[in-house]
Structures are given as C-alpha cells and as structure tokens.
Image: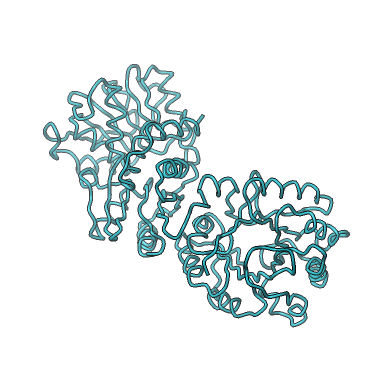
Length: 542
C-alpha cells in the first residue's frame, strides 16, 4: 500500500464572481509544487450561479481537484438546503470535466439512503490521478476535540464500499494526539488522510508521508487557510522539506512554551539539508507543567515508528529535561549534573537517553572574548546573572566554574538563593565556585560587574513582557559586557538600553548560534556548515 503522499492546497471561494481569481490562486499553488487543489465551495453552493462556477473550476483547474461543500456541522460554512448541496455535487460529478475526488461527510452519508444513492460514485484504486469518474473521500471532522468514537468511525469508513479514501481530522488536545494519527495511517486498510488541527497538529501534517498518508493539506502562501494549523505551501515543501521525508527519517524538535518566537526549525532543517542528514525538525509546544513534559516526551520516545532522536529544550522545561533523563536511567553531561538543567536531548538508536547542556559553554564562548579572557579562565571577573530558571542556572554554573565571582538575581529571590546554595562551594576549574544571591531591584547598580547575562524572557517577542528590560534605566553600564540570551527581536529593549549606555553588547543571536551548533553535532556526529547558523539567524532577524 506504499505510495507517494500528495500535497493539496485548499482554496475557498467567497463569491461566484471570484472564479477567475481562484483559478489564478490555483495556478500559483501548482507553480509552488502542489499536486492537487481542493475547491472549498461552502459559501457559493446555494448562491445563484454556484453550480456554473463549480463546473468552470473543474473544467479550468490547473491541477487535479477535490470538490468540497463542507457542512456547518463539521466546521464548514454551508448552512443551506441539503438538496441543493447534493445537486451541485451531482452536477460536477456528472460533468464533462469531473473532479478527481468529491469530499463528503461520512455522517451525512449515513443519515440518508437517498444521499448514498446520489453519491455512490465509481469505486476505483487510488492510482495516478486521471480524468474520469470522480472518486469519493469520506470524511469526518471535529473542530473541538478528539471524538469519542474516533476509531469506530475510521473503521466504518474503511469498510464502506463507496469510500475510496477515508479522511479523519480532529483538533489536537496535545502533541500526543499526533501519535494516534500515525498509528491510524500506519495500520490503514484503505488510502487514508488523518490529521490533527490546531497548534498541536503540525507534526501530523508534516509527517504524513512518513506514515503513508494519502495526502496532506497546505494553505496557499499568504492565505489564511481553511482549517486551523495548515502550514503554508512553501513552508511545508521548502522549510520542512516534505518531499524528502521517508519512513526512515529521524525526527527532532524544539520543546518549549510558548514557541512562536523560535527560529530553531528553520536553522536545523536547513543545516540537515546542507549536511545531507536525513532528519526533520519541528516545533513541539508542551505546556509548562512537569506532567505534560513527562507524558509527551515519554510518548514520543516510545513510538518506535516515529524515530524520535532528540530535541532542543527551552523555557520552561530545561530543569524538566534533566529530571526526565535522570529518572529514565539516562546519562547527564557534567554541566547538566552541576546545574540541574539541560537544553539538549539525545535519543540513541538503542533508546538510551542523554541530556546535555550546550547553553553553558555558549555563554563562555560569547562572553569571554568580549572580556579579553579565555573561556576557561575568568578569575577576577565579577558577573551578574539575571534569572534563576534553567538558562540562568546554566550561565551561573559556567561562569563560576571558569573562576568568575557570580551574583544571581531573580524576581522571586528564593529561587536565586536556591541556585546559589546549590552551586556555591562546588569544585570549579580554579578552586571552589563563588555564587551568591542578590536582590532583583537595582541589582546592576553597584557598578562592580564586568559582565551581565540576561537569562529571563523579558523583552522576548511573544513573551509576557516584550517591551521590558530587566535592568533599571539608570544602571551603570559603561564598559560592561552585556549578553542578552533573548534573540527575538534582535534589538531587544535590553540591547538598545545597553548600547545607549556605553556597554559592549553580545546579542542573543550569537549565543543561540553557538549552542545550536553544539546541538547539531550531538545529533549528527558532525559539525554544521561553518558559519551557517549565524548567517541564517542574521538574515531572519534583520
């Protein structure tokens, strides 16, 4: 039952007068690499001239097409007379240029024997698309949640003799719903489309080909799409390299909450392509609680057919990663052991887990040269770390291990005190580590720091305080090296403030590129193309 997974671009018509424009949009989809176009005719099916418009779309379509008039009950716009909907579908099915497929809801098909007779279309093998009688996609949608009768519905569609392709789609409740999609596709009894909608559903769309899905849907570039979570056509084909994904492709991702700001997928997918590594890298949003992280990451690793081989882990899950790998008998690198936080998961072919902290060496790589020092010797340097989460713990540990005297500040002082207590006095490269907690308010105003590292999300686009700097307006920064771990936007409020007050600034892009290069090497066993990450980041953040 192996076949190439097709890509369909779904285009909705708002008015019968929009046919010429719709055909032009379909031509752009063809030129962009789509295999089919789905004509969504919900809004015009009961309008005067609706049938004539549908017949013209089928006749002049630049790509083989699917015709759909989606009912309001299943997330569509059609609320008109059912007889008129059936009449339009019957007309295009019997026309001189019928569509390759007609999509009709399974629930509507089962509701009336009359509808079944009208839509008892030719049952054919889903070979190469050809002109001839249309074939039937029986579909079921739930835009709210996973339907309780999901498996019974898909099995019933497979058993229906009129069904050429079965389609089932529901709004994902978490990333774990994608795993059920993959099982449905892998165990299919007929050609099948299965996907999750919404913010958690992207893996089901990008990885449809890995599990033998009949097709996946994309939206036209710069168009809103017809269902939540549809990627753009160029995003799917170029950014995620959909055509190169096979059942053997390794899957990676960035785990965090939120993830709207992350450039990691673009960087790592481009590096995979440049290096010839058979991998794809996806955004993997996981809510902030430990239980969500544990359940989701554990499920992805356990799904052997997925071939999940690793992840970048960002806020708020860096401490969760260290705990997860430790509890599952994996290995922690030295810095993860010291600071209790990691940002890189490696899943070996055997299933063994490793947690690495590439944030810590990246801080040293970026900060030490600006201080005129080597990354392994910061004796005599006083450094302030802002934030006591996973990134803050990593920065404090790295700086203290290299010999710097570190102060850590957090809005909740008890968290800073806990980090200081865990690190202070531990053995470092040049004797015992020196780490202390200080008050958040005016932490930088003592004018005694040579380096300041921001490890909070203040100033991050899409974060809770995108316009806020972690430092007071009058903080003395002349000659101080300021590193902001936030990289989106490139010129954060802290970066702007620091430049105006005479600081030497290390943008978050530099640190991000440094830690990402180490992640790539851990996953692939090779260095990324020299300078590629930094160049791409600079281009993305202009």
